[in-house]
Image 1: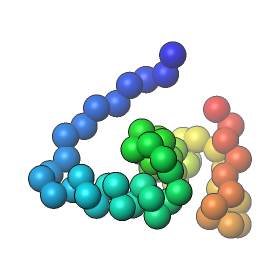
Image 2 (image 1 turned 180 degrees about the vertical axis):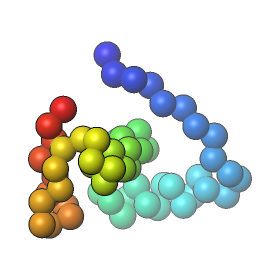
Image 3 (image 1 turned 60 degrees about the vertical axis):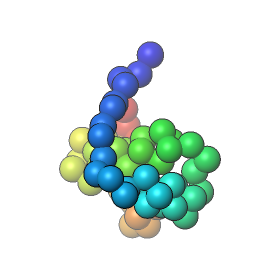
Length: 61
Protein backbone atom coordinates (compact mmCIF):
# COMPACT_ATOMS: atom_id res chain seq x y z
CA UNK A 1 0.00 0.00 0.00
CA UNK A 2 1.22 3.48 -0.80
CA UNK A 3 1.61 6.53 1.36
CA UNK A 4 -1.60 8.57 1.77
CA UNK A 5 -1.41 12.34 1.44
CA UNK A 6 -3.99 14.80 2.74
CA UNK A 7 -3.98 18.56 2.36
CA UNK A 8 -6.23 21.52 2.89
CA UNK A 9 -6.17 24.17 0.17
CA UNK A 10 -7.33 27.78 0.28
CA UNK A 11 -10.94 28.65 -0.46
CA UNK A 12 -11.45 29.13 -4.17
CA UNK A 13 -8.87 26.56 -5.29
CA UNK A 14 -11.38 23.71 -5.79
CA UNK A 15 -12.50 24.93 -9.21
CA UNK A 16 -8.90 25.74 -10.20
CA UNK A 17 -7.72 22.24 -9.26
CA UNK A 18 -10.60 20.68 -11.19
CA UNK A 19 -9.74 22.77 -14.27
CA UNK A 20 -6.01 21.95 -14.03
CA UNK A 21 -6.87 18.25 -13.66
CA UNK A 22 -8.93 18.38 -16.86
CA UNK A 23 -6.23 20.31 -18.74
CA UNK A 24 -3.68 17.64 -17.77
CA UNK A 25 -6.07 14.87 -18.87
CA UNK A 26 -6.68 13.22 -15.51
CA UNK A 27 -10.08 11.89 -14.43
CA UNK A 28 -9.39 11.87 -10.69
CA UNK A 29 -7.88 14.61 -8.52
CA UNK A 30 -5.74 12.00 -6.77
CA UNK A 31 -4.13 11.06 -10.10
CA UNK A 32 -3.40 14.72 -10.82
CA UNK A 33 -1.89 15.29 -7.36
CA UNK A 34 0.21 12.11 -7.66
CA UNK A 35 1.62 13.39 -10.98
CA UNK A 36 2.45 16.77 -9.38
CA UNK A 37 4.32 15.02 -6.58
CA UNK A 38 6.16 12.77 -9.05
CA UNK A 39 7.26 15.77 -11.14
CA UNK A 40 8.49 17.55 -8.01
CA UNK A 41 10.50 14.53 -6.86
CA UNK A 42 12.04 14.16 -10.32
CA UNK A 43 12.89 17.88 -10.49
CA UNK A 44 14.78 17.53 -7.20
CA UNK A 45 16.69 14.50 -8.47
CA UNK A 46 15.02 12.24 -5.93
CA UNK A 47 13.08 10.06 -8.37
CA UNK A 48 14.04 9.07 -11.87
CA UNK A 49 15.88 10.94 -14.55
CA UNK A 50 14.35 13.67 -16.73
CA UNK A 51 15.11 13.24 -20.43
CA UNK A 52 15.57 16.12 -22.89
CA UNK A 53 11.79 16.27 -23.32
CA UNK A 54 10.18 17.43 -20.03
CA UNK A 55 7.27 15.06 -20.57
CA UNK A 56 9.57 12.01 -20.59
CA UNK A 57 10.74 10.73 -17.23
CA UNK A 58 12.50 7.46 -16.48
CA UNK A 59 11.41 6.49 -12.98
CA UNK A 60 14.04 4.54 -11.08
CA UNK A 61 12.09 3.83 -7.93
